[in-house]
Image (cartoon, rainbow over all chains, first blue to last red; front, side):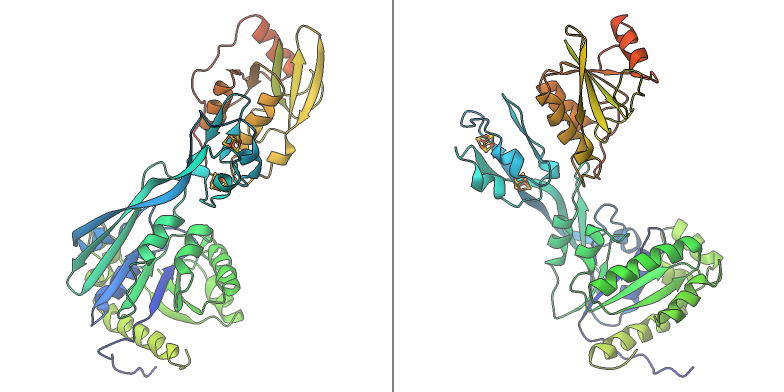
Length: 294
Length: 120
Ligand code: SF4
Ligand code: SF4
């Protein structure tokens, strides 16, 4: 295979790194891509239930800010116990008992409807903290990390807050939460390109097909990275072939990778040869954004 | 006194459903009148979230003051307690057995949720 030499810069774009399940090496890949990049890059850790990009980067976090969501609070003295708010709420976040109205703000989706329909103005909006975002620097990498508070159920508001830090001047790598539900969709939405990290096992294939369906519905361009490509079976490769999905990179299951992880080192420490490959990968995607073919 | 059971059947011979929020239905037994009513809970079986809360709301409306079930999560517990419903976790197979245990004071009221909350 003839490959073009690595370019020094990659066009600014939003590149999401996702996977149908956890533990496929998504985060280490996101970190390695950022490290391989030759120009300043932003890494947005949107895996807010378990942010761990920083473990491989040890950045100095300089800014921390809370993320809040708007939820209703009740003034019981004004409440006439009519129950309209509870009937209205599609998310079962309000219970109206004959003598008490209870709000379960962890189920609230902040639609604001209950506040608008309450006939006695007993409900008002209040800001509830649900997580934090932090921003730090490590060499040419700007890391933005979102963390969902313990006990909070809904990560999308924190993910959106992390994504708001996106600066269109830079290449932005988004480490997405695993799975194919709301958090993952919130993270990949409006990406220019998605890299799906998977493993060549039946589980990997199953979760990959779900992720592929989701991305196709969202009409997002994507490619596959096959991690630990020398384990397992041919299922994923065959599937990608059938579905005309490009496998953009294969990463071997080297012993030194596991050793490096256990010492808190990243993929590039274990496999330095991967660096030019990742640079080429970024170039390929970058060129495809300007009308090129993958 | 009205005693509520979670169940899949519609008589006292039916099995006790260990789930609360996603129980099929409630059987409300009136120990004074010696009669029973069945309240469906199936609008909740597929609720995306808040099944426990909704089930608790449904149950509160029945006027039951005692609930005998397998497990009860934290949100349902909060609603039921606020409404003054006493919760008795029970491992019996059938409602008849459960009722006997309750009448013999073999069951004890729980002061906290008996399982972890879950979000979906
Ligand atoms: S704001 Fe919307 S989601 Fe939240 S409690 Fe009110 S009606 Fe329910
Ligand atoms: S709509 Fe307003 S008055 Fe009616 S139960 Fe809800 S909070 Fe109370």
